[in-house]
Image: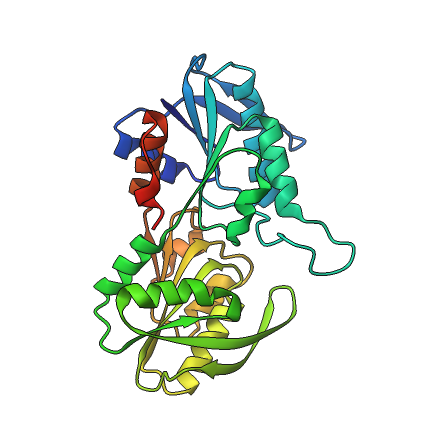
Length: 309
């Protein structure tokens, strides 16, 4: 078993190797002056079980191309298997035709990863579970819920209510609420255009409650901040947030810093940018143990079913 890392999230890769008690594989990555990416594997991988850790987050295109180039290099070095460990799948939100003459980009990304040489994919909280079907290779789709739920428990909030920021996230928020044995509220949201959302109403009682908004992706934080304000306007005592993928693009950190949110709990599927690391409201939780255990079981041919919770 050999674990290699792209440049998108080296700290997570190092933490995974720490859990597995192995040295991280050596690969030389660079960028030429014209922006082209160079890759050379510095370890012998012939016949090895190779795991490549690379989320395809911001900058999405650069991270994706780097992953594809690494996969091609590994495929030509004759390992026994290449498993892509992709904690965050970029372009996952473009998973259907919701307007005339638009692409299904998530399917295109799945095709590219498979063609480049991947034999298996390990990922966390896809934007839509059916994206697994876009791949023609095995996909292990894990969830960050156990880590986030434990972090919410540690808050010891007195009158906890879980909040879904939109109708699409109800299933996720309901699963959290069920395991925490608390009530659920839903935000009625309208999205007039990409990266813009308007909160129309709050479905459920939140007055005097400690609310935790649960979402998969925190991008520009517009929905999150708007939801927090709407909850406070309706009498909530405090508002927190729990998100899996901290994309944090554009003015996200400025919005969070100036918002009603007390804390924003996120995982390390993506490396935090500098201003996010300095923001006192953001708490990052590690998924290294979850991913490391999944890698170990995949390598040993053991069942990973108990991790799908």
